[in-house]
Image 1: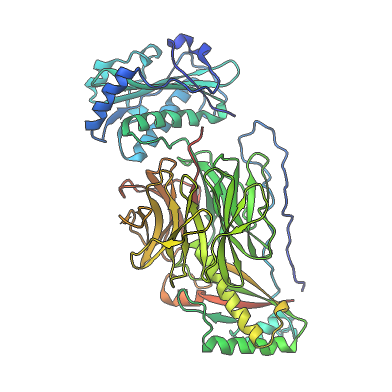
Image 2: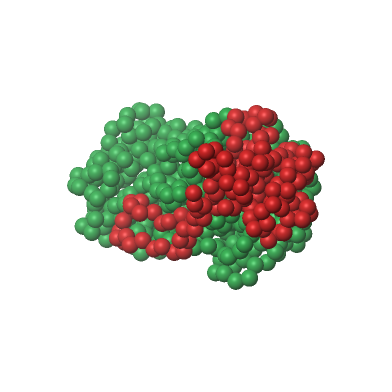
Length: 454
Length: 170
C-alpha cells in the first residue's frame, strides 16, 4: 500500500521504465527556471487562477478504483485536486467540469495560447495510466500559462485503493510551489464521530483523509471514545475510552486493528499525546482530585511525573524539536497556558489575556501556539511561544480543541451549537479566513490532524 | 432485578482481514467495557427494596446529588446537608458500596472537564469519608461534560449539570 514517487525525466511514453524506488525524485524544473519563477511568485497575488482539467490517459481501460475507468479516474483526480485548492482559499481554481480535457500529447506540451485565451494564470494537469499489475501511474504538471513555462512536475505510482493520494500529492505540489508553504493535503485526520441526542451521545473513533474521504469508523460506539491522536508514523492512535466507568488510554494499532491499554492504573487517565518523534507519550492522570502530566516511553516502562502543582495540569503539546512542552494548568485559579522544558523544568505561564486559555497545541512550524480562549464564548486563537501576538481565528459560541495541519498554516477545531449540542469539525487558516465546515457523515469533535504522509 | 457490572474484553482482538482490504472491517474490535451500572427499579408495588439503589434515591429525595459553582469543587452548606443524608443512609447499610460520579456543564473544554469532574467526585467522596464512611466503600468516576441531565444551554441547565451524583452499588 505504498505510494511510490518517481522522477519524470523522460517523455511520457517512457515513464513506465522510470518507476524508481523511493529514492528522492527530481520534481522541480531546471534551476534556471526555478530561479525565474521565484521572482514571479514574489510579486504574484495569491488569487492565482488555476485551471485543472480532467487528467488525460493513454487508454481508457478499467481500473480497480472506485472512480471507474482511467478516463473517469482522470476526471476524479482533477476534481479532488480542485476541491483541495478551492477549499484552501489561496487560489481561484476552475475545475474539470467546465474545462476541455487535454489530449495526452498536450500534457507535456500545453496549448498555452488556448489557456491564455481562457484567462487562466496557471495550468495544473496530468495523466493517469493503468499498469499491468493493477497499480496506477499518475503524472502531475504545473505550468505558468502567461510565462509559457513549466513550474513543477512529479509522478507517483499508487495502488488502486489509494488513487486519491496521488491527487492530494498533485495538489500539494501546486500549493507549495505557488504559496511557498509546505504541503499538507496528503494527510489524515482522526476524530470522534458523534450521533444521538445531546444527553446520550454515541461517540466513535473515526479516521478520514484531510478532505473527508476514505472515512472509516474504528470503534462501535458501545463505549465512549474521546480525544484521539495519530502517531507521527500513522501506525497507531492514542485515544481515551471508558473501562469500568473510568477513563483509560488505549493504543489502537491500525495495521492489526487491535487495541490495548497504554498502562494499567486504578486512576483516571486523560489527554494522551505523542512526542514529535513518536518515542515518548504524554498523559495526564488524576489522583484524588489532583491531575498531573506524566511522560513515558511509547515502548513502555516507567513514567516520569512532569508537573506537581495542586491544581489540574493537563494536556501537553511538544514543540517540533521536542525540547519544550506547552500545557494547561489551573494552578493560578483558572485554566491558563504554560510552557516547560521536556523534562518538566522551567514551568512558566505564557497566557495573560483575561479569561481562560486552554487546549494549547504547538504548531509543527514551531512559531505559533493555537489554543482555546474562553471569555464568554469559546474562540480559537493563536499566540507566539512567548505568549505574545495573540489573535483570534474564530468567533462563535463554542469553538475548541485546535489541531494543526502538517504545514502549520491551517487549523481544524470543533464547534458546538448552543442548545442542540450538535458538533462539527471546522477548518480555518491562520488569517482567520476561509473558515469552512468539513463534511463528515454525522457530527464530529476532537479532530487530530496527522503529519504529511511520506 | 439483577445488577450488572459490564466488563467487556479489553485486550487485543485482532481481526482476520484480507491484507489488501481497504474497507472498514465488518466486525469492529470490541470496545472497552461500559460503566458500572446499577438497577434503579422498584418492587412491583412501587416500594423500593430497603438497602437498594432504588431505596437510596427514594430516601434521599434529590440529596443523592450535590451541585457546584462554575469551575468550583468546594462543598457548600447545601452540599454538606446532602452528603450528611447520604452518610445516614450508608450507615444503615454498612455492606453497601457506592460510586460518586462527577460531571461538569458544557461550558468547558473536554479534557479539563474530565479532570474537573474527577475533582468534584473526590470532593464529595472526601466529605463522606470525613463524616465516617470507610473510604474503601467509595469509588469515583468522571464523565466531564458528556452526560448532561439538563439539555438546554443556559445558566439554569448548567447549574444542574455541575454535579456529583452518588450511586450505591447493588
